[in-house]
Image (cartoon, rainbow, N blue to C red):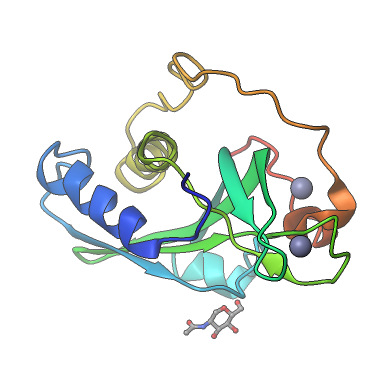
Length: 174
Ligand SMILES: *[C@@H]1O[C@H](CO)[C@@H](O)[C@H](O)[C@H]1NC(C)=O
Ligand SMILES: [Zn+2]
Ligand SMILES: [Zn+2]
């Protein structure tokens, strides 16, 4: 049950998709990093430096670090900030947490993801990068929901969701 946050899973699949599948086949060096306090704000200064953001909603699982309760969510927000500079590409990711309803504390636990969900998120990200850094056509919505089993989850509780509390709701834009 993948309910724990495992950054190395994201790193490994990121590298696999780039090295084995050549998802960004332009000869540049891309790397994935994490920043657990970044927001979706892109200042004028950021934009000048080439930063863009992409927000994705995924299926994930949470485990409360106090009481061990687990719960699934169909609206886990993962935020990516990315840019290409020279021939170095940088992606900075932040997963948003959810709080345990039973404990009622304000502690946000970070999500765990299946390999399939990680791949799906990264493929959408690479599609955005191909469009916004390399000028390719956007094909990110090609089959974006196809093939994923719709698991039933309780209605989203915004008051327990770190992203909703911060007003980051992942509208699908560029
Ligand atoms: C992470 O993001 C925050 C908020 O944007 C920023 O102030 C901070 O410098 C970043 N940390 C690193 C290590 O880049
Ligand atoms: Zn709990
Ligand atoms: Zn939310």
